[in-house]
Length: 345
Ligand code: SF4
Image (cartoon, rainbow, N blue to C red; front, side):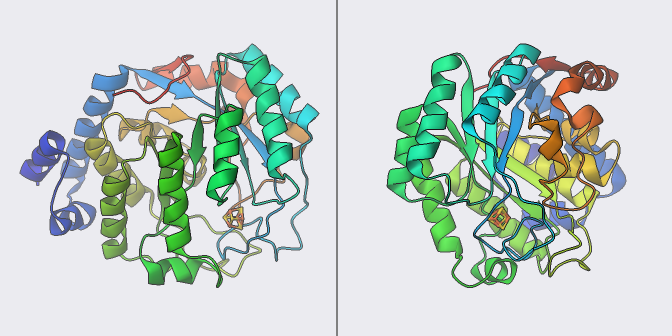
């Protein structure tokens, strides 16, 4: 197995059955060896700095009905909210004061934010904070809309593909949502010039190890600049409420494999990792992640943006707690990097 890990580090590529071996057959010691290699590769690029992104949860309205998601259209227990442009700008102001140089606007697919409304918000942030990166995570849009966002000053876009396997994708999403559309969106984003992020939930219902291998191969083809990987976590008001959560261990293995394949990529230690275990975020970093995304949404809305149960959004996941985040990072040999943290090769 160590030979496989070395080869992956050197060539950034393995055969499908070799990925499968790494995903299924590592001893504890070999896992640690994989993580060690992954963090060495991350440290070669980013030293011991961890980039921070201020996460602004724009809206929890969504026209879609993904079976795994707590803010899906059919969940009538969700308390819905939308941020106004002023509220977004207040969050940015607070974030800038705290030292954030990337703002991530994430939300459901909420058509009340028309292209005109979004362009206005993006332009306002761009004008006030010319030195900051603007990342969007607002779902599937047509080429022209993405282009308008880009031209208004957005730099990055996150859109997880969730599963490249059409059958598995269809088991997670209602009719009308297809992996073809999702993947077309991703290639459009790249074509327009966005630093583009994709990824999956590990352990999502019906996912097989072969599916994960397919996803790894898809990411190899897409070559995203950002890769978001988290464990699946259930939400009590969804059709998947009784499904098992994903495995922390397998999630970390996937993160480490992807780090070895994509040395320059920006890979967050996700909120889902921080939620599944108290030290989940630390473990993500020790498996090669190099980004964290503390929550910068107005505090009164944070508990409402629940994609899954028990989401970590306070304490070390809160933007106001950078001092305590710094302390935790120091304990594992890292430090906050206040750089904007663009993709560089
Ligand atoms: S996963 Fe995204 S698109 Fe699907 S219901 Fe949730 S917010 Fe909407």
